[in-house]
Image (cartoon, rainbow, N blue to C red; front, side, top):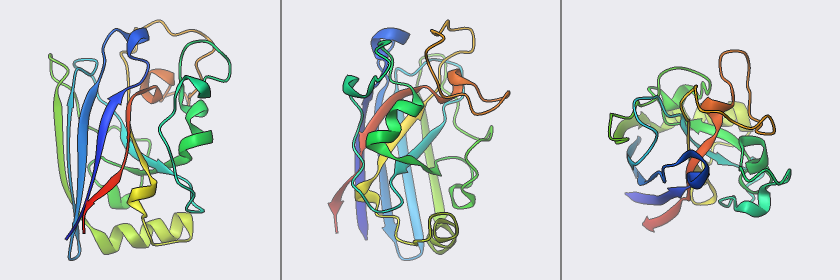
Length: 187
C-alpha cells in the first residue's frame, strides 16, 4: 500500500467570507485507488468541483499564493493557478477514471458547509485514461496539488476574475476556494 495526503487550506477566503479547509487521502492498494476527502467551512448548499492539478511533464506543482494574482485584483482565479499548479488533471467526482472534468457529479456541501467524498477507483483504468490524455500512465501524485472550487452563483465577483469554461460553467464554479500539496506519507 502507498498512501498520500494533502491538507487543504483556504484560497480566496477573505473575499468569499468563509475559509474552506479539510484533507484528502489517496491509498493505492493493488488495483485500487481509494480516495477519502473531507471539507469544512465551504460555501454551503452548493456543489464543489474537486480535482488534482499538475504538469504533464512531471514538474512539481505547488499551491498558489497572492504572488500568482497577476492582475492584482486580490483574487486567485483558476487561470492564475496554472503557472505554479499546471492543468486540471483528474476529477474527484463520480468516475475519476473517466477524467471528464466539466460535469455535475461532484459533492454538494450541506447547510454547514461540510461534505465528504469517498471513492474506489480502478487504478488500471485511471492509468490508461491518464496515458491517453497526458501520454504517461504515472500519476505522480506527490507532484500534484488538489483544488476545491465553487462559490454561489449569486456572489458578486469582479469582472477581472477569470475561469469561465463555457456558458454553463462560469467563474463561480471554477473559483478555487481551497488547495493542498499532495505528499507521500506511507510506502
